[in-house]
Length: 73
Image (cartoon, rainbow, N blue to C red; front, side, top):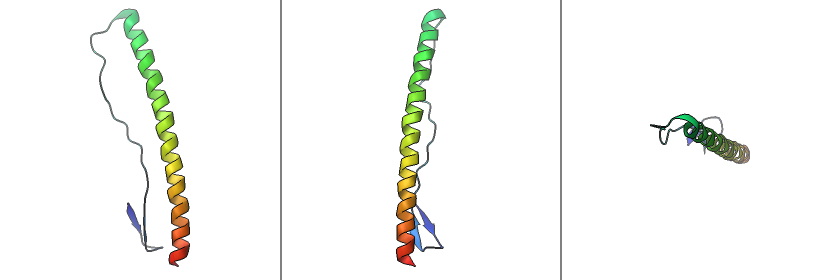
C-alpha cells in the first residue's frame, strides 16, 4: 500500500519475488537429470501462473486507482 499525493488516496500494488524452497542434493546420472527437468517444469509453470496473477491484480488495482482518483478530484 502506498499513498498517492496527486490523488490523495492510498493505492495498492502486487510484486513477484523469487524464493528458493529446497535444494537438490546427492543425486547423480539419469535420476538427477530427470529431477532437474521436473523441477524446471514446475518452476516455469509456477512463474507463469504467479506472474499472471500479479499482472492481473496490478491491472485491477490500476483501474481502481483511476476511478478513485477521479472521484477524489
